[in-house]
Length: 307
Ligand SMILES: NC(=O)c1ccc[n+]([C@@H]2O[C@H](COP(=O)([O-])OP(=O)(O)OC[C@H]3O[C@@H](n4cnc5c(N)ncnc54)[C@H](OP(=O)(O)O)[C@@H]3O)[C@@H](O)[C@H]2O)c1
Image (cartoon, rainbow, N blue to C red):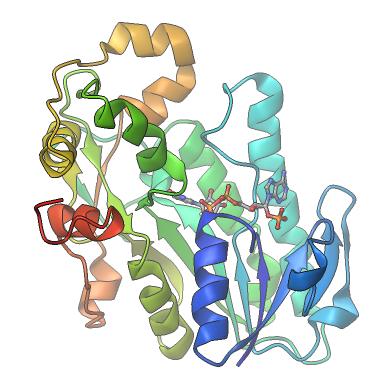
């Protein structure tokens, strides 16, 4: 299959490019600036800021995977940062969707990233799935606008799936990679009271789920990409400490997190939701890493439990 991808240099994108090219697909990276020569192979340019995209270069692709957006977890949520987070997704997605809709040969499918942040913070014990309406807060608003921005593609008859990712477990980037140094030093601990839910997905599960979404023509609209067994922050902390064979004695008190990180702490650290992958389970998508301990052991190369 010929597949075009935005955000291909990111955590999820680089995992997907490796997988898709390794399994015989041809991937065109839709990039903001040319990368190094070796990677240049199939590359086209876009500038979401300026509303420019190489439309001719997008012709002839059967699928488009859209991951691009200003990183959500790096840097404090100042007014400017929040604007970049929202604008990069809203305007970038609109530009892409409009362009795909206007192609002579539009792709059959657009897999567009979104996040379980769509559901907002929910109290422990409340489960959410694709049928649950959007929640409150900044990330819920961003996710809503991000999904809405694909409208032109939907109207043009392109199958659009909104990949509502949970926290991607990777030792190379994202939340887990940020926690690892402290945990390895035995300085890890739960955040706040530790009851907030964490909906996660193993990094190596994503290629398999994306293959599934590419193939299953009956799947469109929101699709939660999370493991079927979310945990609370306390369980996550204990599990990670056990795998690393380190104590986790130092909780990060909620008030301190709030002072240091402001609104970002409330949505990314102290809040959360218990998201279930209802559509994937109903479609009989088999998870390779449905449980946290095995997923973490796999990602951290601790599968025999003794290292
Ligand atoms: N990782 C997670 O745990 C997680 C969870 C939920 C949702 N998501 C969402 O899934 C998508 C992919 O996640 P990821 O972890 O791979 O993200 P990432 O590592 O931050 O990569 C995102 C990519 O987007 C492009 N980008 C960065 N800033 C941009 C801007 N201002 N405007 C346009 N493009 C920009 C970059 O690619 P180029 O430089 O090649 O353009 C970058 O590599 C993101 O939109 C993210 O919000 C991720």
